Length: 516
Image (cartoon, rainbow, N blue to C red; front, side, top):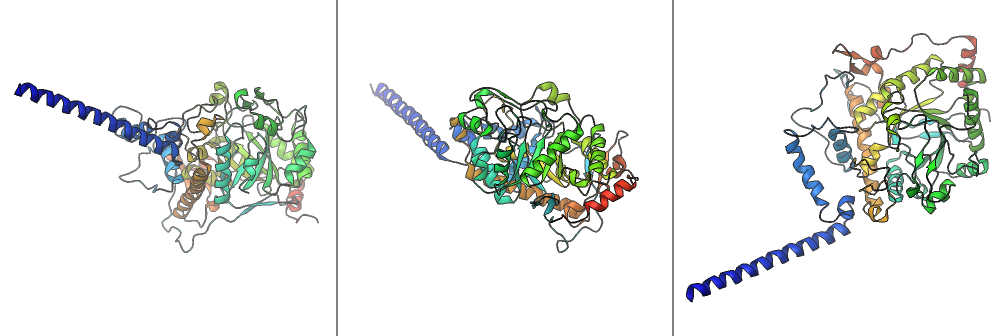
């Protein structure tokens, strides 16, 4: 009996212990659930309480497993882990320094690195980039304060809290936010940041019922002080030659009202502006928008065939430099924040590494480089990317997917399915609730400031005072023979420019102050 009683007592104790442990686990999970649902810093945890924490655990453990079994930090596409990690850390304002050497392989053809100066710029001599005026001939030119800005992402393609976070972050950082082709929403205006109103081929937000340009709506947009420029989109990196596509499940009542389209139906933009069939037509449209708004007007395009650029420049010279677009946004075929057919995303258009220097050189050959500001777009998410663009000749760099990462995007590749787990590219209220605009706006601002700071570090190491002083000879690129060559040799600038009387007269005219 004594032994039997002891065993019964032990079993009773074990049963109580089991109940206590299970109860404690359930209680702990309940506490964690409440914490995750109420916190506002991490969208994954808020949308997927408790189990969402597994992502961060696996992400932490993954770096130990990957060196033996999985992809290394610089092997993924479209953005590898090293690129994403920089954005995440910069957005959180964490230390972005590295130790024990770089994991970047400098031997592949096309790798770019910068050329340090034996006498780098001292902190006492360093300078920040000054605001650069766009559209000096316009009644309302824009002195753009930041060299790194937010590229076009439409409300509808991205969610309300994402737009709010980007707008507030842009206001904090002093950079501009491009509305994307989806029109101007109230959320773009809430923070008072500088805005670039993009006019896509469907002319959302400024369209008549039959899809033509509505001049009254255009004037209405121009009267809004935050709207500083207008960008006519000819094409974008994800899908050159095809218009935008917004699935019907994303066309809510509000999105439909802002864009001027039916609710719940797929919204397919034309693959070009129907009234633009030639270079003269394009310049006419630019002039029309600029005359209607009084604000700088430019164009965005992906370079494929490039003979039209020569025709464009010659037509500008024939009409006079004031006919030129105030800026051009050169998007690379490696861009891709929008949903697109795989064939176009993979195989259409020139990458930015080839198209940007080409456009800069053509403008210089026609003596239009000072008249037309150049904005580089397309997979520019790190200081190295931005520094390269400035070396090649860009005045500004813009990024879309970089800022998606700053908002917490995890490259889930579900932007076109309305199931984005971070709430950025979905209209599902349950998923949107995980994205707190106030918190994410701070990260957006940090990303802008820290990226510009590191571009300045690159510039000072090269021996110049500020980033816009970078030239092609400040960087080198690995050529096909395995050795590096200076960018000014890899992308040689033409030594001869057009010097005829018409060009000289045009140059002289472009330097005159605007008539009152």
